[in-house]
Image (tube, rainbow, N blue to C red):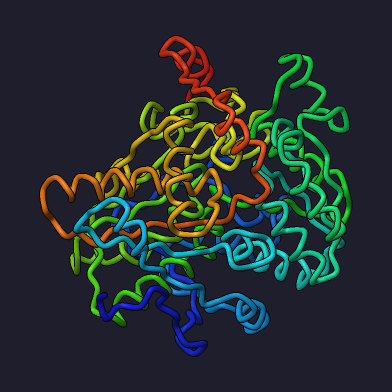
Length: 454
């Protein structure tokens, strides 16, 4: 047994007191967000009717490297942070690999995922601004659960538009949100103008994050005292999630471990961006080098098969435009079980890093992901979320490559949450009824043709 413990815990005083803004170290910044009406770069004043003012400022700040975490948020973080960095000794033994595998476990809070890191920050700024409540979308339900918990803590109303297929597949996640006081609506719904329009255009649709975003934005802008908050994609969210990477970096340094390969699942980019930010910062400053791999579902392959272009962030085309790797805002992915990864685009920050060649991307099929999840669960004792399991799949692949070459690489991946509300997915896998869907080139080309001409 190595002297490295199974779980590397940081002391409370080693928890980050500042968020890290990777854009400050990027020589080539992500392209500016554009106003949907004027196609000009947005200002804080443009975003203020949609987002909390302080969050709008964070969204547009690309020069401040470190932003202080307010004491109230740090006190809340102490309930579940610092989170452990775990050495996957049992998985290594199962694979018979010389690689050392580590995972940063973000499932040790009631919401069950990393999403709480940003939810509590966004709820704090909404409360500080004196708002009545917030609206949002959620895919698998982890973000909605986290936000409903954060809103309950600060006494805010919380309205969640949940992607319809996840609303039906994950009823218990929905009930956790309702227990915390949130109103949960399947999306697309008939409650909003954009929801009615999407239902008319795509009868019987299972929905998408893009649809749910459109509905949540409309709900926020038509109710006095409400603002919209988002659980991924945005720069402000990646900023808050940087606590994951900062803690991981500190824990590795504490034991003199140099990561070789860092892996994260990628839907909108919040988990991946948060995990890799400080490591990418070192690469940008010329201090270190890492292999970083973003893993996305083959059914929604924005990085590996999308185009780098300006696109609407939502299906209803009411949100600002962002330059990102996208499949087209009207793309509605198949109803795969990794609901949190069913987004048509990718964070502008992650997209720019990918375009610069600083990170790699792979797409993996659903059944292979659940095979990896099952292997992990049987030896490591944690039932992983479908989203996180994409990272597990590629971590296992990389460890098996080390078995062939004899390299003892240090592989680090993000375990974003637990899968205890995803039992219908595991049932489908165990029953052999789970299928893989990969969109054809023709399907992707059809949606790509609707990209705005910017």
